[in-house]
Length: 72
Picture 1 (cartoon, rainbow, N blue to C red):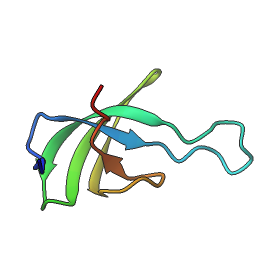
Picture 2: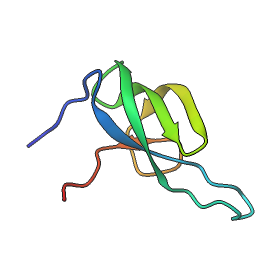
Picture 3: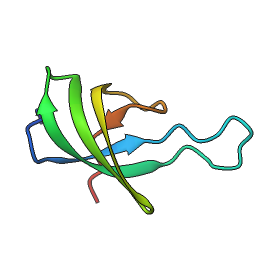
């Protein structure tokens, strides 16, 4: 079943982490605020210490990208 990104959906945003490894790259909850296409969205990323908005985020598993949360 293919999921399509739509405004209001919850996804995971993979944080970058720090180059020295003090903070690891880890998934953060994010809400889709706009859809460019099936692979690119605008996000509101929710961090433990606040939120930020990120435009034109590509789908993938690397830092700075978004993906669907795993089904549990």
